[in-house]
Length: 402
Image (cartoon, rainbow, N blue to C red):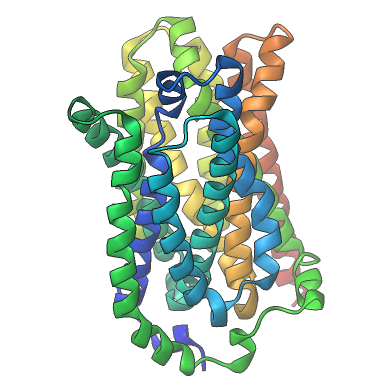
């Protein structure tokens, strides 16, 4: 028996509690939205600032592949608890770390702890998602990762006038980690009971041969590649949208982000139930076409009405695309490897946010303007769309031959 076999409702206590732990993890990342500015406040040389900002996602990108092979359901609870304790120590360390060398070490440790926490929690969480509600499950998880980005920056800005500097707030968010530890203590017996009913094969660490076979599955590889291209496109939007807005002189980029973010969250909250009632491959195909057209149109916008209409389109398309791709990967995975493959989607996110600033910076150095970066992002979306269409027709042919 598996956990999900006994859980028909997605809104079970374990799943929702683990979503709150994910919120905690992303609170400890979203609070660093102005880290570049803070490095200037503590007089870190400008030549090091961009590197230090990117070092945490770079560490996450490098370490996640090392972590995943030995992480499994049986040790995930202990790893999550240890990570929360370490996260408190890391958050508070920003109070006294003010040199380049110490900051490099701290940022690498921070990235490693974030990887351990998110990977461990997701390894547990996927066992509480009923397979028939995978779309809703990953939509809820996506909202959990976005809530901190919507709430923490404005909350931080409101607090900044009353603290010494941002480091006080970096340390202050550790209160969420303390709350998460208390929640994990409440969860311990419930998770133990649930996991006690699981098949033994789901409890052990995946064997190397199983991992190799997993990456020989066409659907898994295609969907992970499609996810990577979407994150490359999304990271381009995240890092360079302000520069594009300044280049075109149309609209307020803060308002654009607000409209797209609210739309993204709204789609995931209120449209989640529909994700499991339609063909996911057809839906993702339509959504990726809309996303590609949006990215192509953005550099040429000349009116405010179109500018904010594209914010709605972008938010809606991204609000559907990522949860659906996650749900497709979940459905394509063997039960024992769902945790591994879901964590691999986080690796594609790490890769997107790590590689995009460097790729974009290279193009700008070579003389490209910011509009061309968005055309490149549209190209990434086209590659993702091509992979999804390939998978769609491949599965169609298989059904015909059955």
